[in-house]
Image (cartoon, rainbow, N blue to C red; front, side, top):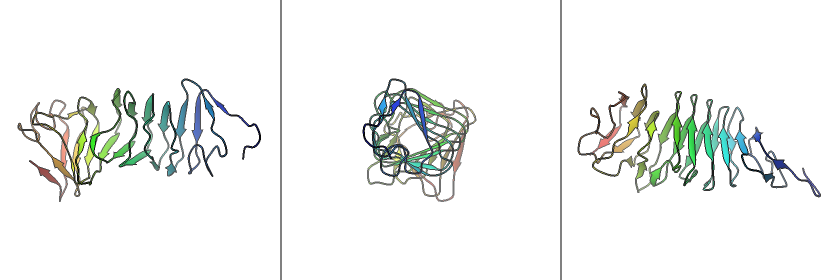
Length: 220
């Protein structure tokens, strides 16, 4: 516990392996808010589940393993990095926004739900390794898959996920896969079709593997 005139200045990377997060009651830094300087990174690095602190970030990294559960984090001015075997579950919350970058490596996974265009980050994307983005929305309004980026692996497990126009096409990396799980419903407005062509809903430019699990639905 910090008392009196205690001060913490963050200029580099601060790694928290506390299950309760970065700052706040029972977290890695209880009792005060650190002073941060340009270029800083907060890393959630526990080999296990962690709660993510609701605050603003420049760069935020998720590493190790387990599920990192995020509240709505609308102010991330730099990069979200998800690596190792970490799973980030944003649920229906916002993660990042205008200009936020997303990098995923290793076997990491990012789970996102909510309505409108997802993921929320509008900056540059770098998705590599066996990393996966899972769209989990089952609200009454559709979760729209962000276009104009190249995905690695995608899983559709929500019942209301899709694309927004008759010419929308999802680009995938070489060696990637597009999976609709047994609970998933993918809503396709592309008039060229679902898959098999350059301009179909799932572009075949890099020959991604299409996996339609028992019980999955493609809705036209």
